[in-house]
Length: 362
Image 1 (cartoon, one colour):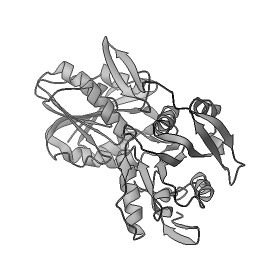
Image 2: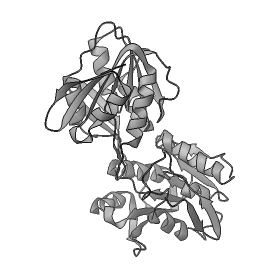
Image 3: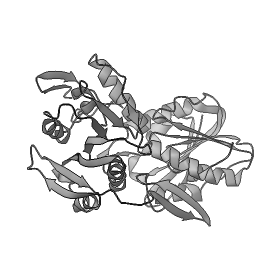
């Protein structure tokens, strides 16, 4: 795995977090390097960083005035770990996509897979923009979509593209359109209940079919009081738990901060606890009667089950001895083999052509 990056006469050691055994993956892309080259002479201008997933921009621009808009707890960890690895200060100015930005001079965006999240980034920039604001959006050409241009043109009068370099390209956005009024929340109806979620959260305008399959097979027992919802998304699974058992207390965990903020919209009150984390840290061990999950295996444009397999190990630690773990997964992932190494009993609670629901006991 390539770990050493030479750029602007400097050397950085950059490692992905969460760690991976895939030697073909590295902690930066050519799109990010192309964006860095574009702003190399932008001295004296504050740069806002969006979707700096592993910290290459924070490291390379550590001597500039920057502010980082974070979306994932694992992203914050990756940035801080790579800064520490290179003996750089970790006193970063962090903001979320729901915060107000002031006087955005320059913004760097690595265009995310989610077009909704890309639009949310652009809207946030425009709200804090001035006439001279410039946005540099990097992407790998194999992921290009004409929707990039359509979205950008809603927020900027000037939208242009650079030439490709090592299969990467930039969109350059200038002349922000400042009179946009839009609510960046989707409304979803599920079994006569209305749920809301912010742009960019998984399965934007409906409950995804995997979660639907899990809910179809979900039966919460009266004694299952302490419930943990891992990779909780907009909170629909916990919402169903509370409908089935009014005595339950739910803890929702998700790596994506907008997922956590969405679940707060759907689960007000004192019976819910919300934690934005990628590793179930801050969650009590040997505490839960029931743990539920529809774990992700897509991370941006990558498919990777390594993170999920690590989650299984931590889930077992959080489960009471007599508790149970129920999850849904795509049938082709063959999680059963991995689960049987951790749990004494693994049952198939439901199965169709696409999904399987597992029920696991310690």
